[in-house]
Image (cartoon, rainbow, N blue to C red; front, side, top):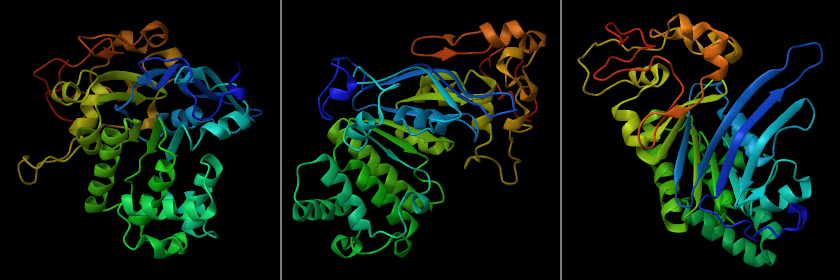
Length: 356
């Protein structure tokens, strides 16, 4: 049986993971220019009821990874390789019709900017009920009642009235909640949230995160949280994959990652976060340089130009192309020749006394 013939709600090969991504690569090509490898051999899995975080600066490949998983990358000028399996079903290479049946029903995505993700010319109610009419056997009245219930579930006040309003009439927090309601409409097995709390105040952010946490606990949904906000990771994720320049460079349990980051980039990210227990007037310690300073992995470690731990062997082709994501203790993986030692000051930041 091909994926084209699989019903949206029918499970594929039974396994422990809802989502398995193996050696995923995404390359953008443009006539007259060198190809750009945005995602370079990314592998991870997410189990039912588990929340996995993809963390890194803007441009590290997090969102492109999620779009590749959802099959939302353009067909022209993009080459996608590797394997993406949802409940054992291979998604890469599946036809558009098969993916449309899966999206919204078995897998859903909450996009970063709700104002641009929602259709500004269509009422919220129409956009929510469209998902229900497409994937669930409902009449329009039943879909309208269910849409009201969904908006109420995600905490939108007076949901019946909000269904008749347009996106610009809702606040940023309510628009984001409406997107989450659309994503939850068919109780998907997999939910990808691409920085869902960006540009929201801290109160609304906490409410959105609590809503996502309840979703995972109540329905056993596998959640992939894409963010650069380590505070979000600390409060929500079970396991964290740190990405840099298209590759995962460190993977660990949330608690272990925060207690003892091993990659200098991870240490730099943590050192960049303001601390409430820091002395008044204490300077921040951002990672020097920018993500644009990365070198190709074929020439060495992409983070080497910004890393205070970098040594000569980090800038050779052998170091960049052959150092895999290796075992670094129970449940930990690391791609680095000169990791941080503990106790330590995060290398890759401008703090003095960085471990070497």
